[in-house]
Image (cartoon, rainbow, N blue to C red; front, side, top):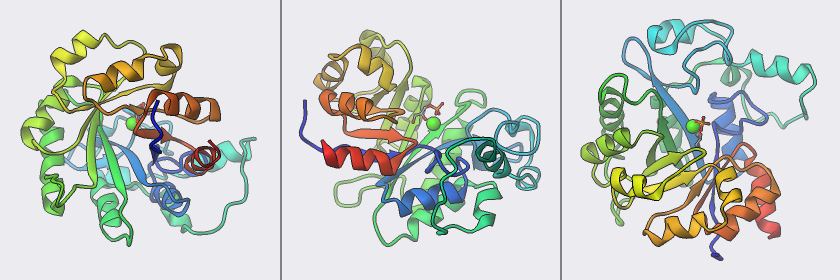
Length: 272
Ligand code: G3P
Ligand code: CA
């Protein structure tokens, strides 16, 4: 158990109330005081890194098709916000929220470059956890594109004197190793779902890389956090949306909590 307060990361932005991965979701999360943002990235057919979770555009836009087969201009022509509005109108919590974001921020595709620019322009330090999707399909292209983009911002190197606000995350140990080779000092996170044999992780995931199990794994195995931390690795946990799960994270010594509900999670932490 640790008494340190974990960092609260807004998963896909404030995705409980805003359309995930839009500028609106990220601005809302920042407005709510999130200390860090989580973002999934995919490669477009013409080589741009865009903030989209799914393989296809079908769920979160008004279009259809596979992200990696569409060009940036085609993706930018879609509406990325109305699906959320529709789901709210059909019965979701739909609370009235203060108007800190423009309507257009809700409907536009967000590129990773734009999101990094927003973070660079903030007047307070905010971190970003960038998860590369389809990591192995194009060899190391996604990681190389990411490393190059981070270099443009001066964020590809992380030192105590000049910490990078960025960490890279992946469910692929290969992608994590590739990123380590490209950016040896950048903080990295290996994501795990359902089952995690420690021996496999020790063999495949470089030393110093944080381990991020899903919260259900941690709830089922109260010693898991201890085993991860005993290996000198940070414990990050996703996706933590209830007070019970926040408790599990605290009892496990988590350094980072990734949540769709940043405001509620911070309130819960205040009360514990
Ligand atoms: O933050 C980790 C979490 O985002 C991994 O799952 O499917 O939401 O990308 P997913
Ligand atoms: Ca993710």
